[in-house]
Length: 316
Image 1 (cartoon, one colour):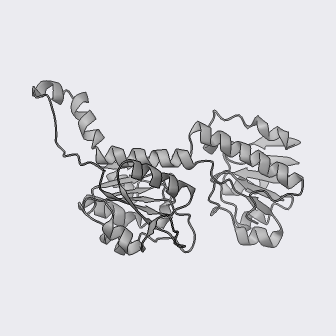
Image 2 (cartoon, rainbow, N blue to C red):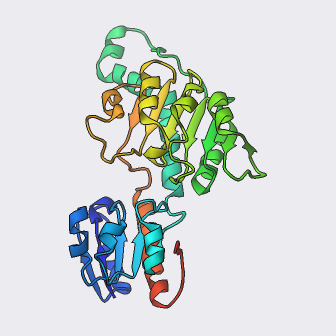
Image 3 (cartoon, one colour):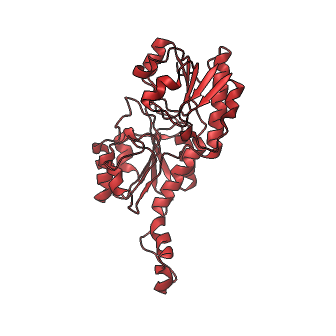
């Protein structure tokens, strides 16, 4: 079996990809692959390992040897699943590998914004604290999270882990989930937006979730709301969020994912990126070293299963 890794740059230079030789007779590794290069890079390959590369019908149709696509992620919206099903190309994802990593960043963003850490650390770094002659600086005002309502959109592995963290901080947890569950208070998206002091988003991107946090939903949010999205950029109206932040209609914004990655200078978040009540990160929530090692190990097992006729982690 010949395996091609199409975008190793997104997996980190510190990850040892040699374990793929356990299941591949030949392994070729590309640092990055443009849409135009996909047919060339997959020429003669049986399996493709991708993270952010988009594999659509127009390129897959020019890769006749391809039998398996392994997505180094849980979400697989960058793969044309209908075409793969029609062509008989197997697709596997990786589930659960990044739960702790993403939940950790979610909590870090909320605490960063709630504690106003940029302002307070800035006061020390600038020398204002030293020159001020007063033992404390207490502006901007910090409020405890205990007793606040934390709304969680999406209650899979990551959402549930964030719920545990939120409860440990003393928050009341409410949940927006398509299929209600018995172990959480489930509410509508409208109620989640209007009741929550904190909202964190952990939804997959599909036709049912695209744009679910619309301008209308953003308008329902409380002025003190901290909004954090670590799921997919396209589940939100990014312009509406940026405007709400600028106009003081929400108090803080933390985002790790964007409808365009990396986002260009014309993106609405570019104009708010330097604000102290904004925490933007470069799609790194999933990528702790431990999570990436688990992800690679799962990919190896998915390929091994495929070679042996199994269906481990198969989407199609």
